[in-house]
Length: 433
Image 1 (spheres, rainbow, N blue to C red):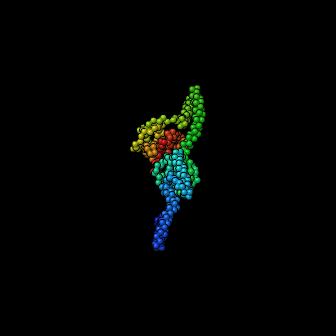
Image 2 (cartoon, helix red, strand yellow):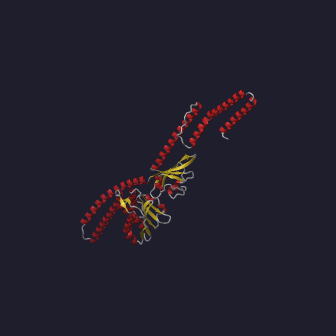
Image 3 (cartoon, one colour):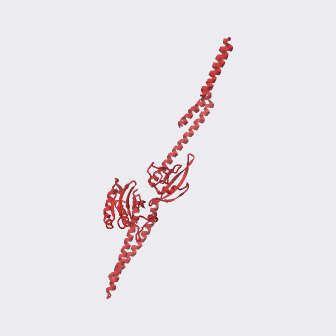
């Protein structure tokens, strides 16, 4: 039963009982009966006024509770003039002001933190209590190829090897991990308390570009020093050899003269090869800045296929282009991309030796150029070593072609990947941006 109704029912019953008693006791004394009835009426009115005054704080609290339930913290109560009630009103208004201010600060901090996470160059991944991905900022999406809003499964169930490695990491653990191809990341797993429970989050910073830039500075300096010394030496040696060939007397021993001239010619030829060898290395260091313009990737693949068709036929290898996928023109340096694709096809043909297939294709998501072959593939023990500058699996290989491909990809804002898939095909990819 409602408290107000119970109170008025109680007061009404009491006053009604007193009125009935006064009727039976004072019915013969009309004047006294009238005075008693007037007194009872005044008592009832006074009880009603007193009840209203007593319940005013409760009514104010009720309206305040309704405002809090509706999360309307802008409502303030007006003073009533009653000291006791006004003290309650003052406390309530002060509480609402503090709540509104703290709520505003929390919302501003939340908005700032959200914007900071979205704009951060470091990849940030939030996990739920069961270790499933709930949110990833744009940097993490770009690093791991995640699609916005499409996260399902645990880290171990992810297709990206980096996330699979991070699945077993405990909060506070950090280190450098290798992803696909040249990808290297500094990763750290931490945690925060949400609704009384601990949740993990992952921070990742890509190191690939910095490491590649440092590698290029290191081997570029070495190559320039080598080229300087080799070119100076070769120039002097060739000058001496030419002079020796010119002044060497025929003499009576013609056989000796022919042997000496043949040896000098071989020495000049070896010098020329050494000079070409150093020029090949210098090409990687002197690679110019890309001149960007719109490039049709399918047309580029057709050009490369025509260039390499004769070499493929010579070793009975099928060179083909995958069915085209509609890709708009890409801003790139066509000459550099063509050189990179030629080197990639050469590596594939050398890997096959005889027979086999080489497939060229372009893919839009992510944007990449791929050269795939069904050759023996990259040995498992060398899967991580190919990112080393001038890496080669051939005994007499220089590794210049693959290093040049990596550099061209880097200058286009992308990266190079080399991987032997589970189906036995080996893919060399240039990811563009």
